[in-house]
Image (cartoon, rainbow over all chains, first blue to last red; front, side, top):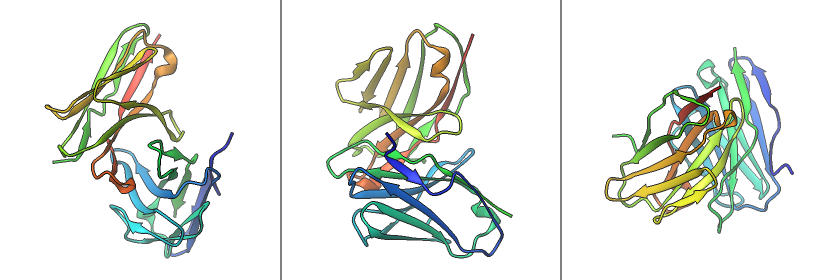
Length: 112
Length: 111
């Protein structure tokens, strides 16, 4: 029973390209998150959204933007990919009355 | 001072042994606490919440020590399948954006 899906498991892009990472959840959750995970640095919050069209910056928003046009979908956009954005990107969702975050399988992005 | 700190390990433990590790948090107003498990190349998944009174789920016991600001996870009779990274998560702000992850403790159960 898949709850959070991400558009790609692996992605290779060139420096300067615009990159879209898509996340979809089927649990009708209000909150959605984008994290990146790097060795030795753990999970770091990039952006989160608590409702449709609402977004809040996380700890490391620079170089990223997001879009939440529908409740089930949360997109992460790299306007101009750089090599330091090579990472594992994880999407998560959380219900308003819940405490358990559900994560997608992750997208491993390589920027060359 | 980092908000949520864990010993990264790795903890190498023989199968059948008991292992415990802690997670310290800096914000005394933190309200909720969790342990997540992350297998290699997989996403994190909730293992258990940590309640003030402590809680147990099979071989796993989680405890909270508010006075010293740490939570702990104890695994009894460890199995090979327990090998994973265990992430401590603390909600320091109460809202959804207050969820703060530790960097994880890597556990390796050896046969």
